[in-house]
Length: 84
Image (cartoon, rainbow, N blue to C red):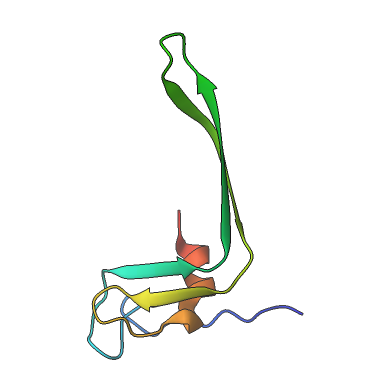
């Protein structure tokens, strides 16, 4: 099943704007049940440097207004497409 992307109607076209407070700059993505695996290399002086980072999300993901907390998850797929 193909998930339809809901495009926000903000200006310019596709800009996410919170309907509750008008915020258009600050947003939060929350993922539940996440496994983060980081591989490190130990340096000659005993310190560590991260080499690789893998993240697996096993739960739900929410997209929220960063100012008022309004649930904007309906725009999450659009957010992912527009993240560079």
